[in-house]
Length: 417
RNA sequence: GUGGGUAUAGUUCAGCUGGUUAGAGCGUCAGAUUGUGGUCCUGAAUGUCGUGGGUUCGAAUCCCACUACCCACCCCA
Image 1 (cartoon, helix red, strand yellow):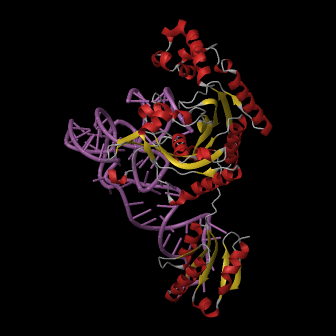
Image 2: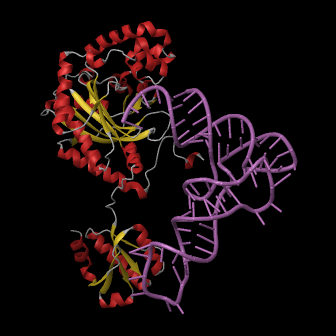
């Protein structure tokens, strides 16, 4: 049983669906290219400590969701739960800080988190991401949001909202935490048990607790935005101004806290339906945390599976541009040999051609061609081979054109434009 | 990790309060007078009824465990 069952929370990508992924991947690369981002690739696993330090060892991700094991050399290794930590590590290891700033990168990776499977939530999931280093002004913040939106819109996603917030720098957060605790303290006993525990350790989380009691207790609580320092405030105002400049609609959602420790100042989410399709923010202290010189950074992660689910729910058709140009049908043994060679020659020239491998009848081959989806079919029997002339059928219109066999390449190429 | 639901052909599902050879649509394959697909018509194949155990003369149907999926919490992409 186990051998015919993929591990929980993993999914196969089947041949009939792969074009969808290719479409999104190509689209993302193209958009990143237009925005001046270059691809970075890095290992699937890292030293466990990288994520403990980067993501934060009090976060859920690190505490209970990591795939961690000891390798044969006794090193503690973890399958990456996210991309940012690795990119920062690579930035330092490869001296990318010596390159012209800002350094703008993108990636397309699988990530791993051990948690309960649900729709749009897998143990191995895939994300597109972007990370920028060295630019501290708010225009980069707006740039990556606009990049994500451009990509999503190009994919056909039009139902979504952009929610933004600022969680300030560590200094403002400390001040705010104290204010929040002062506000909640009188009602401390009324909070739900988890929030009771959170009170000292991570009071910010109480704000978006779903329990009704806590929602009630949080009403009228001080807002983080009112406690951020002048520098953080200026940055946030600048961020909003840049979004306005681009005509991007957004909502300020003071509830966005994000579960990864490294975020500072800007945080944002792009929501569609019930999913956070894209989430990210600024992490100005992370490179320093890893031992580098203070370098601002910002990025986002975008869930591919979630995006695909949303596109499907909304009835958005992903175009399939991987269809065959030509399906060649052979009648009889002679023709099979002839078309096998013909297909090979056309394939050498870059035409997408397929042929029958089952020795089926004409009708079956036509049906097969139709199901595969192809632009043209050509039927070869002894007649065609002898005369060197064949009928090419346009599968969309049903019309046929008589052409010389050695003109097939020109015919299809000419039509490709 | 916690709570609830579901599990029947490739797929979506039907199968009444346990009773003989478990059904349908879609899909697949093959035909429709030996050279042209998509519509229509005809026919065929396919299930240890999620896995293991129990109750019973008898279980797809009732009970338990396990596994997977779905939903909520938690968290996040």
